[in-house]
Each structure stands twice: as structure tokens, then as C-alpha cells.
Image 1: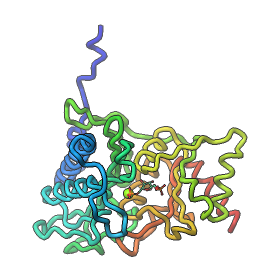
Image 2: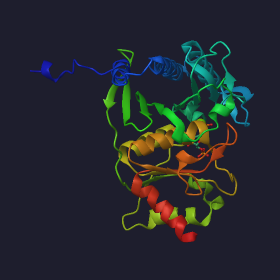
Image 3: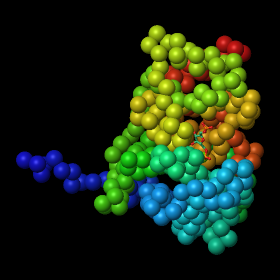
Image 4: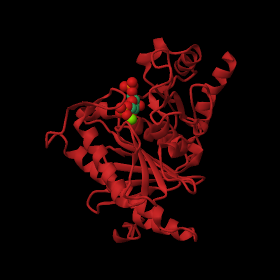
Length: 335
Ligand code: AHM
Ligand code: MG
């Protein structure tokens, strides 16, 4: 007894990627190599976050990013780790990071076919309290003949070839999906140094009475948003409120347990807070592929929203299919 319970046929991310590649005869292996570089960036960012308080990495870096957010020391390190991994993979032509104003074009990779978008450390306001943060990423394939510029990135989520996010929590989790594919969840085994497939084919609950939003903003909300939030509390069995303030962590819980996460546009932030390219679109792809929905504050499918500028923001409602539908129906009623 005992030994037969031990799984000796472990599916690591590396094995999973190789098996996926074999399914596509036309695959060149470039995407697999890009994923290996992504995987390394997640491992290294997780490592520094875990050690932050020990090696004096908490607090502000004394700089602010393009849109005026104070940068944490770890924001800078996370960004540098991510950029270096993408550059050295040789697979990436253009990169957009929340922490860098302009798109980064890798002149050393003139023939690379991929464009990557990322928020290296999402939820960084939570960092010094040891709350979970994570990395959000999306991958586009450059159009035939494109030399690579930020215009290659001003595309809707429907054109992403892959997207996902990590959450550096009690363990590091990676959630990843490809266009039209399933959603798969991996857990970092620190002893093996490998992401292990622990949540294959994630299919989120169709409904669940949990809502997740920063209600501190409610005085700025539009009427339909106020009505929706009130309906959560006045439901026959009132909903539970859960808000971590780290989208990756709120999203991960919502994927597993069901419910809804909302960061609406409001009077204070008329365009919303979260970024279309590297926060909203990748999350929308994950939620749709897991059977949920994601819409913006105009109740438009988030995946179809085209950013005009690389750092554009949007309101977002994402979660279980039925829970997002409730928001859409209330907005429709208001016309
Ligand atoms: P960041 O990319 O600067 O970390 O900001 C994004 C974060 C999300 O993770 C989270 O959902 C949201 O901001 C929380 O904002 P607020 O503090 O306004 O509720
Ligand atoms: Mg962010």
C-alpha cells in the first residue's frame, strides 16, 4: 500500500508543451520556446517576491511608471526579469509592459514572429503586506510581412494566440489558454522546480453567489452598476463579498469557485482602471475559454474591444456565465 497512490507519470508544463506541439504538425517549435522563456520569467519573479522582505526589496523604487503609479522596487525587478527573458528567447519582436511607456522593439530579433503583452507584477500595491500578486500575459502572432511595431499590438483579444496569468500565493499557480482551446492550471512544485498540471481543462461554475468589486468606489458608479451591486445584497440568499485587490488573485478564486469580478468605469475613472491590452483581454480570453463571460462597461464583449493606445484602460465585468449575464440584463433594462 502507499506506493500505488504516488503519481509517477507527472505532466510538467514542459511535457505538456511538447505534447501540444506534437499535435500540430505545422508547428515550428517557436511557440514552445517562447513558453519556456515565459515559464522562466514566472519562476524568477516568484523567487524574488518570496524573498522580498529578506533582501530589502519592499517599498517604493522612487520612480513612477508612464501613468503615474508609484513603482515598487519589485515592479522594476519583475519588469526587468520579464523583458530579459523575452528578449533572450529570440522569439519576441515587440513587447508591451505596464511598466514601460513605449512598446519595446527587440532589434536583435528582426525575424521573430511574436508580440507579447504583460503586466509583470499585477496587484503590486499589495506586495508589502505579503498578499498574492501575479503576472498577466498575452501573445500575438505578427501579421505576415510586419516588421514589428506597437501597431502590431493594437488588436482585440480575439487575435491573441495565447494568454494567461500566474498567481504567486501559497504556491505559484499558472493558468494558461490558447485561442479556441481549453484552460489549464499548473502548480509550481518548488522541490522539482517545475509547473505541474494540476487543473486540466478548467471549466468554471456557471453561477455562484460571490461578488468581487471595490465598493469603496460606489458613490462614483453609474445607476446600473449600483443597482447590480444592490441586487447582490438583496438576493433571496445574499451574495458573499470577496475582494483581494489583486486581480490575479480575485480572478483565480472566481475561476475555481465561480462568481463575478467587476472593476467598472465610473465618474472618477471614466475609462475604467484596468488596462485593455495586458489585463482585460488576457483575462477575458481565460474566462471565455473556461465557459464564463467578460464584458466592458458598455456591455460589449471584452475580447472584441480594440485599444487605440497600448496603455488604454477599460471597465470590466468577468466571471461565471450567469453572473455576468445578470449585469448585462440590468444594463439593458436601463437602456
Ligand atoms: P496594478 O497593475 O498597478 O497592480 O493595478 C491593478 C490592480 C488590480 O490587480 C486590482 O484588481 C486593482 O488594481 C485594484 O484596484 P483598487 O485598489 O482601486 O481596488
Ligand atoms: Mg496591473
